[in-house]
Amino acid sequence: MNGTGLEARRTFLFRVVGREAELLATTDARVFVSPFTVERARLLAVDVEESERVEAFVARFSRLQDSLGDKLLPLLLASLGEPVGAVIDNLDRAERLGFLASADAWMAVRRLRNRMVHEYVEDPVLLADSLNEGHARVPMLL
View 1: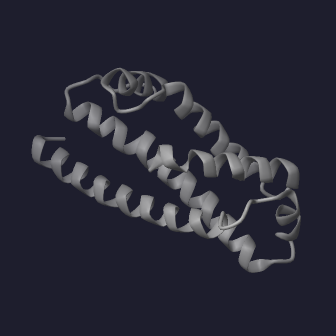
View 2: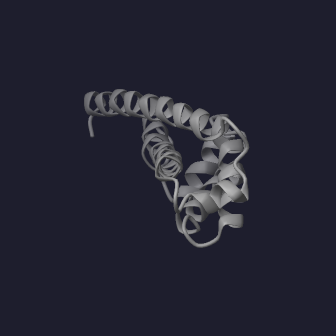
């Protein structure tokens, strides 16, 4: 990709990531207006509106995390003339450059994203714990 194409892609991704961040912040505020308890997780089976809000939170959290780590970060590294490699290598490089406070924390968020998606229906205790942890990690993504 030439310099102009790189610039256009970077501008596009900044715009997309900004919008994704706004949507996550809005949904986070709606879901966590009160503590997310195990009882709330259990009621998702019958509370369609709450279930849709939680689903939107999980989807928006996941999408922003993916967009930042898998799309924008490699593009930023390439724009700076840095080598782009495996996700963990990119995260380590981003930490060294000061883009991230901790590559390990980012990987923990990546694992959390997977837990939220896969535990959504199975276990209300794990779901509530995962959602609360996700809520605590939203500022890092924003």
